[in-house]
Figure 1 (cartoon, rainbow, N blue to C red):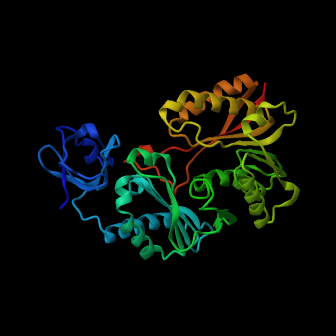
Figure 2: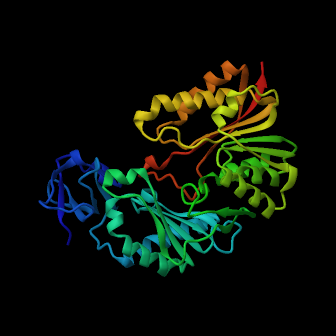
Length: 396
């Protein structure tokens, strides 16, 4: 049905155990002239079929398996995968008719759709396509999205540096309907805005739902400092939980303005939601006598690849040590990292060193990870990336 790629002997174990990646070194033969992004059938050294995937000649990941059966990858197949993924989100408590209408519908390999991300903001879908194989299949994806969700608009935010490895240009444009204005959606009963066109990622950080629930639980009566606040979603959640005030520090004036809008949407504007435009690194480097009873440090991914690891670790350490000095005795410190190359062990090591240097002791409250709509598959542990440590600070 599809061109056949054959594995070397004893290289089939990962596929048998349903891991979707096959590296180029595992292949013994590839059909001559096979085009980048083509659908292929994978067979073991004995010729037994193992599944169907997409091929890349430029990436170290030569095949991304879509299905561990010999099936046709068509519009019906895509519609089935999308329905199944959305039904799982409904089990999680997300979707139309719930208190959360902004959520990730498809999380790539974790949902059996390597190279594809689909985020839903009420009746608007935003997609990201990161591989040449999924890019070739995009017409089928688009048709299936329309059939399953009947969205008002579909916008593509494939402005991903990772596309270069696949020989793809960065891309951001409307696929259906007009480019959407900021879209209003609900998250656990609060009102938020996503900006699919000009915002970061697909317009909002949907993966921090669980942390925002924790902030609502912990914030009562506290004064909050929100570093790298972006559009202030953490602060809105904390205000819903009864925090006294929030100071939001971010370099982007448009993000801070969006934060003000979100606070007002939830009846939380005025002097309880204060913004300050600044580079957080420079802001923390200045002498700051004031302390806060809740400090949230949620920087962007500072380690985007292995080559950035050393410099990124130093940056995380500086931020953590400087932010800890602003937490009052008995206050709470929240530290997040979304860098794949900065593990939970790295985060713990950074916290140990920074806390000693800042003269504080950290008593654990919670470890929080990415929300359920960004699932961590048992077959694909690489889907884990977001980690947050919440601690009470004691001054020694």
